Length: 166
Image (cartoon, rainbow, N blue to C red; front, side, top):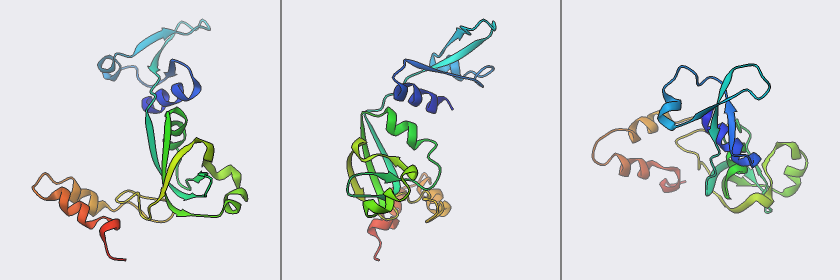
């Protein structure tokens, strides 16, 4: 929630975003977050998370058209505020679709084309993560990648979709 709050603050063009649920944790002190008094007089205080403005956001979408309009069919929880907060947006997508396919349901377009600086078609590009509804997380691949042993990274890269024979 705090990461999304920082992204939302940047997307909204404000210096911070208030959040609940931080009280009682050391996370605020560790990050140097501050509290402000409720300006409406309740007497309570709320933590405020500073704006997070990434230079570049890279997201993976289900579909993209030639104009850069991108659709994510799964949860857009992180992707929406991230693409609004970033200075530049790059999109990889499972497939290229006609603009008419996105225009038929424009409300499902997560990132409008004018925000996308560059795009690439990368089937299974979220692997070993998931891309709803096309594929789930590949837990064995994640576990193998996380092994602290020589050759783990090389084995992971060799098993990636872009290096496998079709």
